[in-house]
Length: 178
Ligand code: IMP
Image (cartoon, rainbow, N blue to C red; front, top):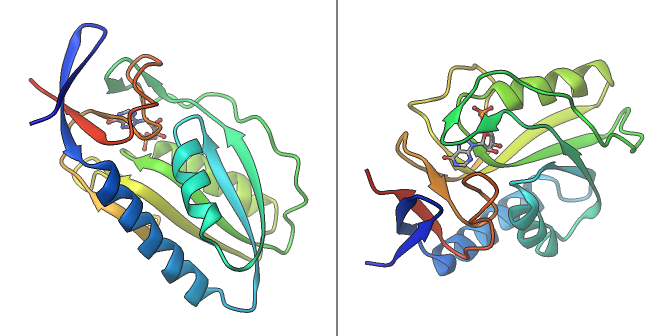
């Protein structure tokens, strides 16, 4: 069992880098198939989704653009539930097909906020893809169209996800050892 220490906490490997990359390839194939012949704008949610976005985007075979926005709702290992300022909108997305890319959907507060912002910008269609999803923590009704892995309601790090800013560079996803 692969273990790692970040600051004061111990984590063990839950999903290997190989499994993640294989799954991202499958997700990209699905998106390529579902949007064949259409133009798509991918919207990566920073900071966590930067690796997922990069890996997925390389495998997209569509007329596609990419943009990033930033919004943080997390401090330490528990979601604060309060959502902060949204920054980085610079694309004209009116009338476009948007695929929101999240590293993880936990309570869904972040996603709800993003979808709200997209709705007032009159986009044609909104889809959501997330690498990780915690179904037991999810409190919203917004459908999630592409899910990499459903995981238990535990704190995870790696592949873009952090614990107080650290661990984003880990190529696998690690779960907290309690
Ligand atoms: P939500 O708004 O509760 O769905 O949380 C979404 C954001 O919280 C994600 O984009 C992550 O940045 C962060 N987050 C949620 N769960 C975890 C976790 O287990 N590890 C690290 N960050 C997390």
